[in-house]
Image 1 (cartoon, one colour):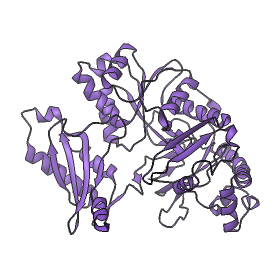
Image 2 (cartoon, rainbow, N blue to C red):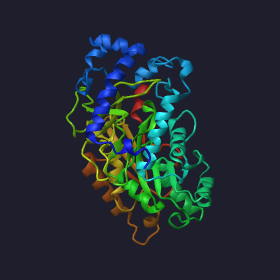
Image 3 (cartoon, helix red, strand yellow):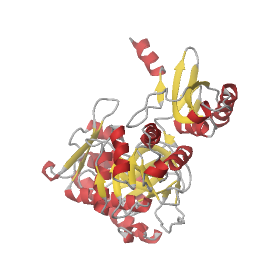
Image 4 (cartoon, rainbow, N blue to C red):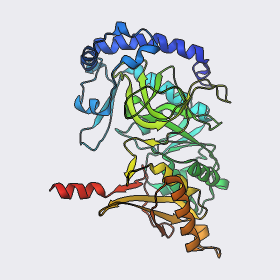
Length: 438
């Protein structure tokens, strides 16, 4: 086991580490980041007021706009010369979110990612095919670095060139695939198109899937078609990148590496800290980041955190799967709708494929449209009944969403495919609002 001491820490030991690191981090951020010194003074507190975990709720939140407002170097806690790498992600405002790393940060991130691979079921000596994008996005280089630290052989295929990806899966007998779950589904379909049977021709054992929401039904589909263990990986650029949390082989929640990340769950509307086990927005404090420490960073991800010991023996708390994002939530006719709910309803319906699109529009009232492809085998079978399938899809959607949607069944391979994050939602109301303002 890679870094067994860290992976298998007992809960009491985790709390002791967090207690020690949190007070040190408060002083470090206060002394070295002008934004935090200003925030602390506005709240009428100093690092001396943070004497343990029970005082963390006194610290003001950090949000993504803080990073944009201080673009590009404003939250640096070290001289720029000590930064060995920058990553960035684009946003709707046009100003990127920039994250920075010292050499020590890179070593910490590498350790976290090696743990992540190992906890998911990968080992030194595995062959990792990394189909995440390389560049400013943290996924490609994060998954690459972690695999090397663990002792794996890495094939840095990056995104795209699907035919070549599939050939390398076969030729190199890749054992670990790292990519988005939607691309894994696409690779499964394309493999058969190019004459390969993933269950017979490939040697995959673990899939490291992240960067977008996906359902248990999608996981089951990937596992059955690719012959691997499909593991969920959680992270975000602001928190190093991937490697914040990962599923173990039990697939019963994602273990947060809590010796490096302190997690809270809050009411997204009020900011109130919720009792352990209640669903809310995840908030993270980084416990040893040098270049860019983040205190109480609001992720907007909605989930439940489980603090009970896992069957695997790990005591690190578990995210019981992210149910959606507060900023991704659609309000349709006064009803809260998460894309993950739509996906779950569709994949529970026998006869539908994994590819779908949600469209929200309005004339006078909000309207929800769902386009979904028909499963290819079902479409070509003698049992295909379009009216029956349409009725089943409508019933499942209504049962989960408590709202009616207009469903359109599409022939197989109709919706556009993507090698990155799948574009699942189109909100045409935003376009109407822009037109009205002109």
